[in-house]
Amino acid sequence: MPKGIFNVPKAINEPVKSYAPGTKEREQVLATFKELYNTTVDVPNYIGAEEIRTGNTKTINPPFDHKKVVGTYHEANKEHIEKAIAAALAARQKWADMAWEHRASIFLKAADLLAGPYRAKINAATMIGQAKTVHQAEIDSACEFIDFLRFNAEYMQQIYAEQPVSSEGIWNRLEHRPLEGFIYAITPFNFTAIAGNLPAAPALMGNVVVWKPSASQTYSANVIMEVFKLAGLPAGVINMVHGDPVMITDTVLASPDFAGIHYTGSTHVFNDIWAKIGQNVHRYKTYPRIVGETGGKDFVVAHPSAIPAAVATGLTRGAFEYQGQKCSAASRAYIAKSIWPAVKEHLVNDIKSFKIGSPEDPSNFISAVIHEASFDKLAKYIDAAKAAPDAEIIAGGTYDKSKGWFIDPTVIVTTNPQYDTLSTELFGPVLTIFVYEDDQWLETLKLVDETSPYALTGAVFSQDRYAIEEAAKALENAAGNFYINDKPTGAVVGQQPFGGARSSGTNDKAGSILNLLRWVSPRTIKETLVPPTDYRYPFLG
Ligand code: NAD
Image 1 (cartoon, rainbow, N blue to C red):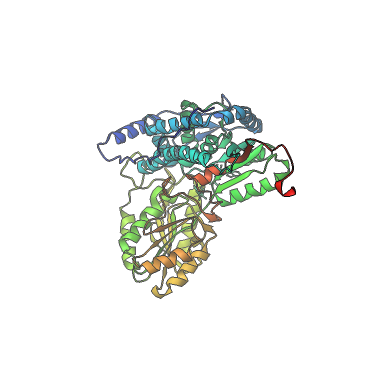
Image 2: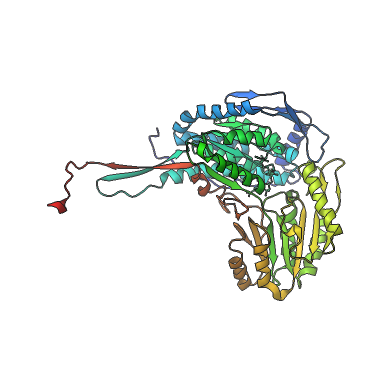
C-alpha cells in the first residue's frame, strides 16, 4: 500500500517528429522498415505466461505488396479462448491489489519505450502491416499511443483524488475498484494507438483483459505485446488472441465473469455484440460495461464566406490521408455554389499532385487500402458512380490490385442530396460532394444533420461568425467532435477527447477521464469516528 500521496509526471503531448530528409529519425525508421521487410515474424497468442502457437496459421501480407509475406499469426480455437479467460481471472486479484503507482509505472515505462527505443519499430510495423506513410504512423503508433498511456496515468490519479466531503465526526471516502470479472477488448485495423489503448486503459485501472486485435493489425499488435511485456506487465493481465471473431466473441460473452467490452470498429458488428450481451444478461455476475466507438460519415460544410483554399486543403487532408481509412475522415462535403469553382480547381490540382505507392518511399502521400474486401467494395461504389445519372467523378475513379490494393483518391460530385455515398460509410479514399445554392445555407445544415445515421466528426468552414454560430447550433448532435475552419481528423489526446453518438458509438471519449470512469466501480466508505451508543434522538426528550 502506498505511503505517500504521489503525483504522476505531468503528461504533455509527445512531439511529432518531422522525418524530413537528413533527419536521424528518418534514417532509423527506414532502416528498421528494411530489416523487418526482409525477415518474417511468427505471431503467437499470448495467454497467461505462455506464447501459444497453434499451427493453424494465416500469413501477414503488406497491403501495398500483397504477395509479399512478412509473417504469420496463429489462430486460437475455443479451448484457447477459455484458457485466456481463465488466465485473466487467475491474474485478477494480484493485479487489482497492486498499488496504483506501480500500475502507472508499467504503462509510463511502456510510453517511454515507445518514445525511445521502440519508436522506429512500432512505426515501421504500422507502415508495413497497415500501409501508413511515415507521418501517419508517427502520429498514430508513436505519438497518440504514447499520449494515451501518459494522459491516462494522470487521469487515473485525478479519479482517485476526487473525494466526497465529510461532516463532523465522519470520514467519507470513495475508492474505485476494478470491475469484478474481466474486460474484452476488440480493436480495429486502422489505429495502432487504439489497438494498444483499448486493452491498456482498463488494465491501468486494475482490470484484466482478453484482447482480440483485428486480423489486419496482427503485425503491429505483436510489437505492442512485446513492449507491454518489456515494461513489466505481469502475465495474464492482457491476453492477446487471434482467430474467428464470431467464435471468440461468442465464447467470451458466454462467460459469467464477462464484466465489460471495450470495442472500436464498425457499427453493425457492435450492434450484433450488444444484442448478444442482451441475450446473455442472465448469465452475468455483474452488469457489463458496454463501450463502443463505431462508424462515421463525417462532413465538411462550407459557407459562401469560406476561404476556398482552406476548404480544399481541409478536404485533401481530411478525406485522403491514410487512404480515407480514419473513422473521422471527411467523406461527404457540402459546398456553396459561389465558391465551388475555386474549391474544385484547388482540390483537383492537389489530388493530381499526390504520389501513391509503398510507404517505404517517404515522398508517397497515399498508399494502398487495407485488404481485398475493402478494395472490391470501393471499386463497386466507384463503378456505380460512373454509371449513375446523378453523379460525376471529377478526380480519380481508377483502381489497380495487381501489386497492392490501390484505389486512386476519388471525388464524386452528385446533384442528389440523398445519393448513396452521402450516407453510407465506405472507409476509403472516396469523397462525395453536394453543391448547394448560396441562399440554402440553413436548409443545407438541416440536410447535413439528417442525411446520415452517424454523428462522429464534422467541420464548418466560414469567415462569417453568425454562420459559424448557426452551424454549431444546427449540428449540435451531428458530431461528437466538431471543427471550425479545420479538417475533421487528427484529434489529439488530452486536447480533443474523441468519440461520437447516434450510430457512431457510446461517446465515452477515448483519451479522457470519462473513458477511464467506465472501467471502475466506485465503493463509498463512511466511517463514524465515535459511534453513538444510545438510539434516543434529542427530539424524543
Ligand atoms: P471491423 O468492424 O471490420 O472490425 C473491428 C473488430 O471487430 C476487428 O477486431 C474484427 O475482427 C472484429 N469483428 C469483425 N466481425 C466481428 C463479429 N461478427 N463479431 C465480433 N467481432 C467482430 O472494423 P475495421 O475494418 O477493423 O475498422 C473500421 C471501422 O472501425 C470503421 O467502421 C470505422 O469507422 C471504425 N472506427 C471507429 C473509430 C471511432 O473512434 N469511432 C475509430 C477507428 C475505427
